[in-house]
Image (tube, rainbow, N blue to C red):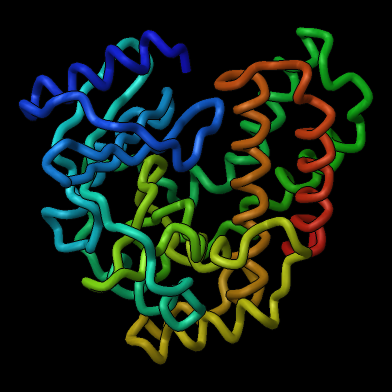
Length: 303
């Protein structure tokens, strides 16, 4: 983010809250977002989070989630400048420990019990089975820009998944269907002195809760259906709906969840490549990631 824009956005937030200039400490910075801790002269602290479109509506989602009873950080103020959102958030402090699988299962139960919110985009069965078609559209646009040229294998894999999608997407609206955090990882779950809070709601939507459970262990390692099955069973033990264990699309719940989560990630990576980041320098890394995930999708969804 441009330093002048960053400073102007922060100044707007300080004006809204009537606070003086603070000391600023970077916590995490990425090309499309960043987090800083602000320390004010009176000893209070706030978190300054800024993010670029499409992550520019998180303030609305956080306020909505809090209203509906989801434990999230309080938004003290927010402002938009161009394509950028800035927020002053409650500072939760340092976590007292890392979140484990039982923490994740319990948090998912709370989130998935939350009433659905009409303001959130919906990913239902029709949208789910359209993901490979959308990915093919992204690939076509990339090729028209003379990028992603040697990717016939990616096109073939997406074609195969698209042909199988109608059958494999069946059961998408089985419970749990509702709030999906979409970035549900242990690092998104803050365990503090005053309990736990869920962070990073920038891409929340209404959809199959199993996508959250499939995302919890990340995508860097090979997908592990046995590990996810254990996690699903822990989720049910913690109070989640027993339907989380039900077959869907002709597949065990754990394979269905992992397969569609990887397909959802593929479409997102390809959209980033052509729309949000749109930087050819990153193409080789994105292509490798997409190839790896598509191999997993073909296997998990038995295509």
